[in-house]
Length: 121
Image 1 (cartoon, rainbow, N blue to C red):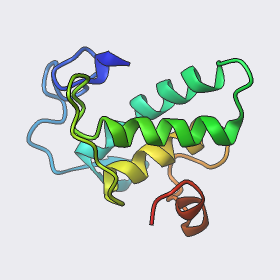
Image 2 (cartoon, rainbow, N blue to C red):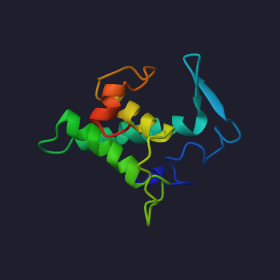
Image 3 (tube, rainbow, N blue to C red):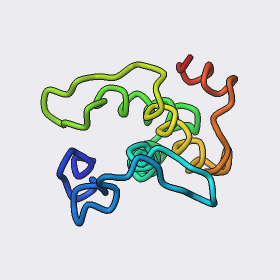
Image 4 (spheres, rainbow, N blue to C red):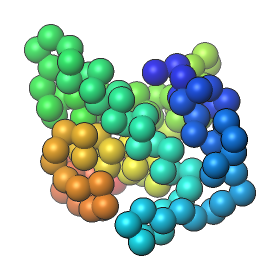
């Protein structure tokens, strides 16, 4: 998971700068903040790590994925600056975890009920 740190091999904006300078990207003709798109691979990988643990549940794995994203809000693995806000990045982490769990499509926004259920307002 440490590869997702700023400048790491999992930082999709770092190598070759594919998202550098772009405010919006499109996925299936829907615009998204480019920076937030980078939360999807993190969320999918973290969810898979969580669900693979002994006695893991789908709900617990989704919650733990979001909590990890919030704890490492700035992406730094050492002395991270947490982000517990209800901003776009955290919604994209939740969206990616829900998608990886088979609970919604990637192009479907997080519902108000799921946001509340997993701790976003």
